[in-house]
Length: 214
Length: 96
Ligand SMILES: [Zn+2]
Image (tube, rainbow over all chains, first blue to last red; front, side, top):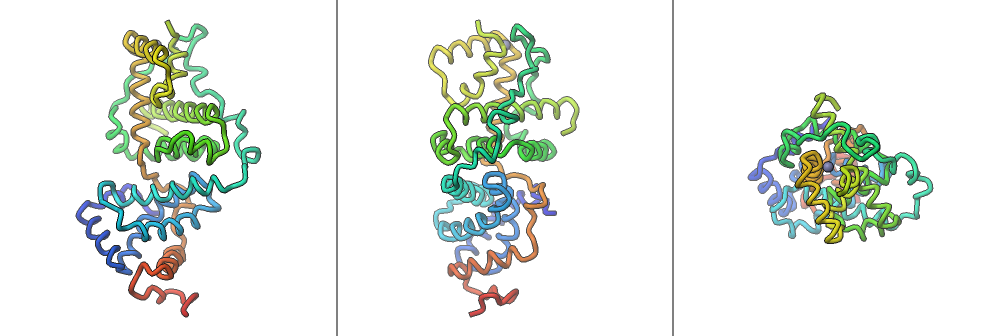
C-alpha cells in the first residue's frame, strides 16, 4: 500500500520541477505524477461518488488537469489542486445521477441520529465537559498523522450522504446550494447531515485525545 | 439563557454564518460565560478548518493502484496529446 503521509511531503522545489516537466509534456513526469497522486485522487473520488465510479472519474480528472495545467499557479500544492479537480468533477457526476436517495442513506436512520444526544443531562448541561484539544490548532490536527488516519476511518464508516456532505462542504468548500443541487436534498437536510457529521468527528477526536486510540 | 445543548445544536450554523443577529449574540454571550461551550466551539472550528483542502489518507484497498491503472491513464493522456514521448511500450491496446 502507498503511504500517503510520505508522498504528501514532496518538497516545493521538487514539485515545481515536476510541474515544469508536465507542462513540457514529459512522459516520465506524467507517469510519475499519475503514480504518485492517483491514490489520493481515488480516495477523494471514492468518498464522494463511490468505489464503482472512482477510477473513471480520476482518469477524467487527469485529462482535465492536463488541459488546466497552465492555470496551476503553484499557490496550492499539486496534490490539493488535483483533488480539487476531482471534487469538481465529482459534484457534476452526482448532479447527473438519478436520485438515489431511497437506495442510499436512510435519511431518518443512522445519518440523522444525533451524536450529541448523550452529551447532556435532562436540563441541557454537559455531562462530560469538553476540554480544548491539545494540540488544538487546525495545523497541528492536520499534522497528527494517526489522528488523520482515524478521521478517514470515521469518514468511511459514515453513511454515503453524510460523508459526501462533509467532504463537499468542509474539505472542498462547496456552497450549500451546489451541494443541495447535486445531492437532491433539502437545505435543512444537508445542514443536519453536516452538523451531525461534524459532531461525530468531534466525538472521535475527543476519544482520541482521551485514549490515544481510534 | 440558552442551555449548553441548545448552543451545541447551533454550532455548525454559527460556523457557517447561518444565524440571525440575535441568535449569534445569544451564542456569543453563552460562550463568553461558559468555558465548556467555548471549548466545544473552538474545537469544532479547529476540526472544520483541519478538513479544508485535506488530502485524504489512502487507507482502503480500493484506493491503491491496480497494476494497469497507471498505463490506462497514460494511454488516455497520450490520446489527448498530453505527452510527447511513447507511453505505449507497456500494452499496445491502441497501438495505431
Ligand atoms: Zn454552555
